[in-house]
Each structure stands twice: as C-alpha cells, then as structure tokens.
Image 1: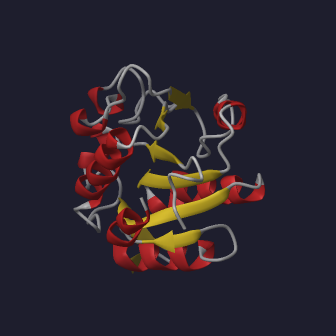
Image 2: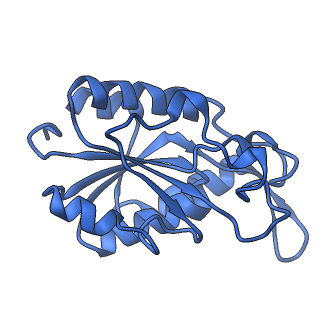
Length: 188
C-alpha cells in the first residue's frame, strides 16, 4: 500500500491543551508519546505535500476544559494547522457531524483517511466508526492516540491502557485497520 498514490489524508483530532489535565479526565493517561508520534506523521505528510485536516472539540459546557472560554480549548502548539490545512470545530464526538469534513474530503478525491488524536474511546472511536461507515478506507494509528482511566458502572476503575486496547480491538477490521506510527511511515 502506497499512501501517496491513494491521496491519503491525515486527520488530527482534539490535540488540545485541556487534555494535559489528567485528573480532570479521570486520571492516568496512557501512551504519553501520542503527540510525539502524531508530530512525526504530520511532518511526513507535510514533507510529501499530502492533505492534512484538523478537528477540535468545542464543548457546550462552560465548565469544561474544552469550552472556548477556557485556555484548554487551544490546540497544542506542535500540532496546530498551517494556513492551507482546514480546521473543523465540532461540538460532538464525531469530526463529521456539524462540519464540512466529509464534503471537503470528497471534493479533494480523498478516499483514504488516517486518524490520530484524543481520546481513543471517545472522539477517535466515533470519528473512526463514521469514517468506516461513510466508505473511507480508514487507518487508525494506535500509538498516536491515547485515553484516560475510566470508572465503570459499578464504580470499578478500568486502566487507560485497557480502555485504549479494547477500543482498538473493537474498531479493528470492522471500521479501520489499526496500525503503528512506524508501520505507517513505511507506507509513505
């Protein structure tokens, strides 16, 4: 698979400062290298002049770290879009709902979408599921996404790594190909 021949787009989702506050999101984030891996992919996409798209979350809850009035809404500096890279602001988990992402991808003839971002079990899972359902060949980069510990319905704590791995397992083959940064870089 040569992603250059496929006009594969890179979609970066919710790389926002607010996700640096682990306690707010439930504690203990897995995969502390997610941003570093996303930067590697972003630099490669830009060097090859492949299409790059960004989406960030704008919470409607004024108390959320991702509300536009809070500094946590800001994108992480190393992953901000360049002038020619579209930025979509979403209010729900999917980068496709309430944005022009689908239309813009189709207009550019993109049928392969590579997804990275935060958090694995929320916006990444939802966006990946929709991408697959909309007919995009979808690749999700396992080590360029991350999540946090979660409380279960009976009060038990599930580790961020378990949440991450089970989310990836649920998406594998049904909605996307799960791939590492290193393996993906071998394709481009």
